[in-house]
Image (cartoon, rainbow, N blue to C red; front, top):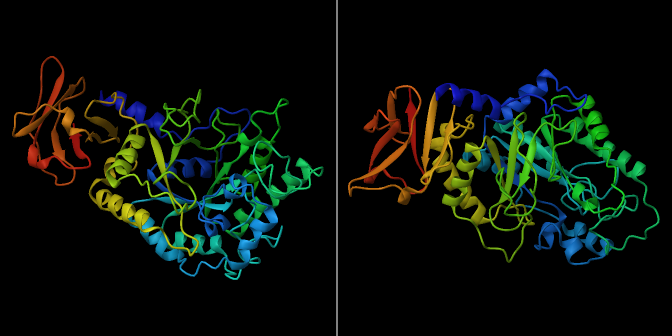
Length: 444
C-alpha cells in the first residue's frame, strides 16, 4: 500500500506538462507548479467597481445598465478602509499560500495602472492608488504568492466581439474587431507581468461567452499563452473554460465543484488532469462580488471540510471573498478566515503538500498522504460505530506494519490493530473526537 500511495501522490502533485502539442514548460515553471501544490488553500478576491452597487460582479449585465451610467460610480469609488497589509495578514493567518485578485472583470474596469485607458482605479477614481501594486508589495513582504484574475470578455469595449452576455450595455455595435481586442489584452497582460513581477499566475475567465456560437470562435489562446510565457516563463496559466485544458496551460480549474463532481453544472465531461496541478474555486456565501442581500454563508466547519476533501483529491481550494466598496472584508468572511486559521494551526500538515492516498472515500471521511504519512480525516464521526466510550474506525489495510497512529492536533497515540485478514482498527476515545475533523496520522 505504501508503494501505491507514493506513486499516486507523485501523480497528483505532478509537475509535468499536460502533454500538449509543442508546449514544454521551463524548469522554473515546473518549480512553480510544485510550489503551487504545497499550500492547498488560496484566497480568491472579487473586488472592483461593481462593489459600489453591492449587487455582485455581474450587475452591469444583470441590471441591464448602460455602461456610461454604470461608469459614473468611478467618480465616487474611494475605498478608504482598504489595507493590503491587513488583507494579506488575514489570509496568511488562515493558512493560505496565495491569493488570486480580480485585476479586471467583465465590466472592463481595471484595478491597476494601465496605459490602455483612464478607466482604471489610479486615473479614474478619487482613490488614485494602485490596488494591484499595493497587493503585490503586501504579498511579497507577507510571504504569499499573488495570482491575478483577468477577464477575456468585456461588456464595454466596442472592439470585443459580443457573445452571450453584455448585450444591453449601450454599445453602438458594428466595430467588433478581435485583432484589436487581442492586442489590447496583450498590452494589459504585459503590464501586469512587468509592473507586478511578483505575480505568479494568471487566472483567465470568460471563454464560455462564445460557447454556443454556430461557427466556433477562435480565441487564439495558445498564441496568447505563448506570448505570456515568453514574457514570464514561470507564470502559471489557468483558464476557467470548463473544458479540457488548452495547449500552454499550467493548471486546471473547476468552478464550484470538486474534480469528478458536477453539482453546479459547469464540469460536465471535464476529467481531472493527472499531469498538472488542479484547483477548485468556491464562494463563502453564494456570491463572488459583494452582494448586500447575500448572508447565506457556509459554516467554518463546512469550509474546512471542503478544503480537506479538495486535498484528498490532490486539489487546491481557492476560497472567495467579496470585499465591500470601502475596502473592508465583510465580518462574516473575516470570522470564517479566523476559524479556518485556528484549525490550520494544528492540522495544516495533513493538507498542505499532500495528495491522493489511493484509498477510496469512506463513510466517515477522506484520506490524504505525503511521502511519510497517511492522514485519516474523520469528518463524519457519526458514521463510526461506538461502544459508548470509543468510536471505532475500521478500514481495509494491505500495507506494511503500522508503527503508530496518533491524533494530529494533540500527538496522543491511539491503540490500533491490524488483523490477519487485512483490516486496520483504531479506537478513538469519545472525548478526542473533534467537532470539525478528527485527523489521525498513520506512520509505518
